Length: 182
Image (cartoon, rainbow, N blue to C red; front, side, top):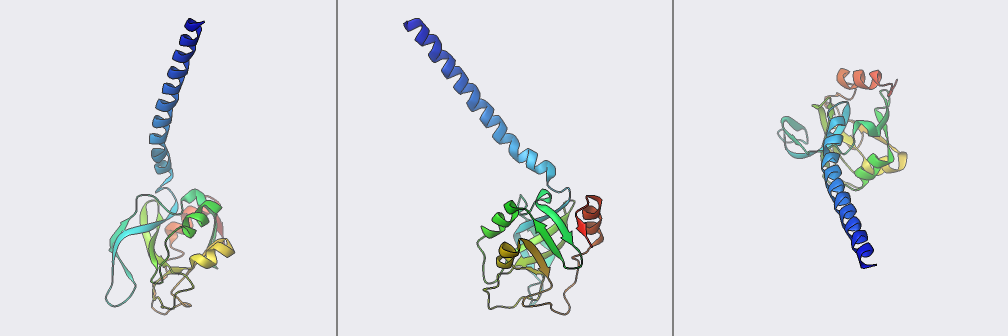
C-alpha cells in the first residue's frame, strides 16, 4: 500500500512540476504574442514622456516616448467613422481607458499606424474646467457612448490644431481591413 502511495505522490509531484514549467513558459510567451499584433495596424499608446511646444498643449512629436504596450490594440478597434472621427472599440479597450488615472490636465496619448506616431493628443475628461488647444478624446463620454470621439481641442474644436485624424496611413490600414466607415 505504501508503494502505491509513493508512486502516486511521485506522479502528482511530477505533474505539478510540469504544470508549473508550462505556466512559466506560456506566461513568458504572452508578451511576445501580444507584440506580434502591436505595431501592425492602428493603435493608441499612452506616453511615457513628452514635451509641449511653447505655451500650448501641443505635443512635440520628436520628444514622444511611448509606453511599451498600447492601451487600445488594433484588435480592439472595431470600426472608424472618418466623417465623425469616432472609433468603435471593444469592451477591453473601454475598460483599459476607464482604468487610466485621469487628470484635469489630461493624459497624453499617441495614435500610431504600423508602429509610427501619426498624431498625439490627450484623454481629456469632461469634468476638467481647463481648456485644451490640442487633440482630445473624452474618456468619460467614451465609456457611455462606447466609442472614442477624437476632437480638435476641448471644449469644442479649436482653430489652428493640425488635423491628422484621417491621415492616409490610418485610412489605408482601416480600409484594407474593412474597419473604415465613411
